[in-house]
Image (cartoon, rainbow, N blue to C red; front, side, top):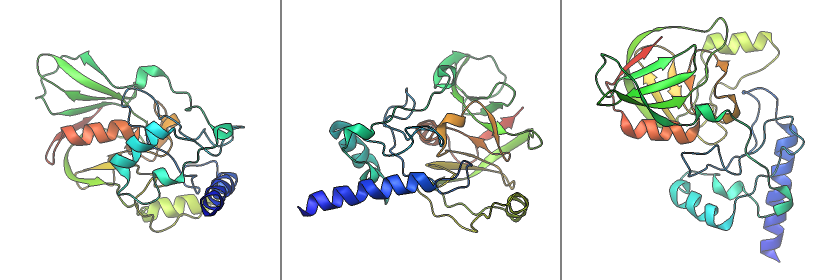
Length: 245
C-alpha cells in the first residue's frame, strides 16, 4: 500500500510540474530521463512544451536499470519516471542529420581540435586520417552569433548555472525573472556537461531541450544533446583548441 501511494504521488507531482512549465528555456522544467543510447534521440524524453502529451515520461524496467546505474548518483534523475504505460511519450522529433557520426573532413588542424560550423549547425572533433566526429548543435540566435578561436579552460559535470547580469536584465525586460543560481541537474539549462571557452561567458554544454538542436536558439553558447556532450567531454581535455566559424 505504501509503495502504491508513493507511485501515485510521484505521478501527480510529474503531471503538476508539466502543467506549470513555461514555454521558454528558462521556465521550470519537468523532470527528464536520460537515454543511454548515443545514436538515438532521448528515449522516453518528455515532449516539447505545448505538446498534447507533454507529461509523465515513462522508462522501461530495462532502461530504468541502465539509467540508474549510470546516473543514480545525481539526485532526482531516474526516480522521476513512472511505470504508467498510458503516459508513455515518444521522443521529440529531431532531424536525424544532427545525430553523431564519423565523416570525411579535410583540415590542417590537429586531431583533438573542435571546429564549430555555425551556419550549418555542426560541431566537428578532428580525428586522424582526414576524418572527424560530427555532432549536431544549437547555436546563437540572431544577434548573438560570434566567431573566434579559444581553448577549453575548464570542464564540469552537471554544472551549476549562474546567469550573467546582462542576461538577467535582458530577460527581465521581457517579463521573465531568472534565478541568480540553478544547481546542476536534469532541469538545468546547461545539461549534463559543460566545456568552458577561455575567459568568455560562452560554453559548449548540454541542454534540457534536445529538440532545439539544429536551431539558432541560444545566447551564444553552443548546445548539444546530453548524450553527445557527454561523449565529447570524454574525448577532449583542458587546453583543447576550439574554433568557431
